[in-house]
Length: 141
Picture 1 (tube, rainbow, N blue to C red):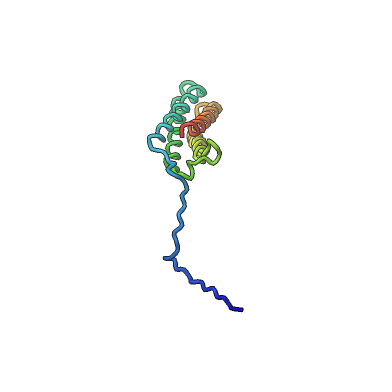
Picture 2: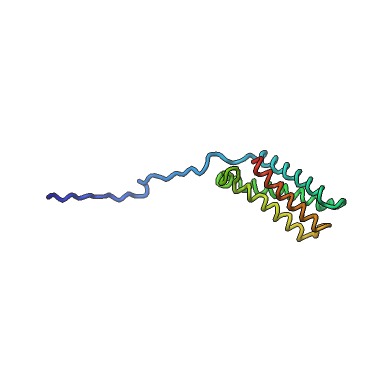
């Protein structure tokens, strides 16, 4: 009976094949697309604020409009990467869910730093702006 020897040679790191992984194929959005999403969010948030806030609460209306738009732009632009833009659930990406959270937080911080003219109605406008942010992010991006 003959003995068979198997000899393995050790591979050096330079001989190993590099591993490549493709996470996604170009699923990022242009700055123009993000700006349009921001504008639509701001317009819908302004409409909600105009409807719910008392007349004359212009600073609160401006805050809801600007902060809703700014939160969407800053988040979508900074998190514009395939891993967050790809849909985990059909029709919903991580960015779709997180941009409205940032809208809610921005508007909450504003309300804590400067008490709104009518806190109850401001809360309603804040909720509607958050819903608008979710809807716009799901539909447009």
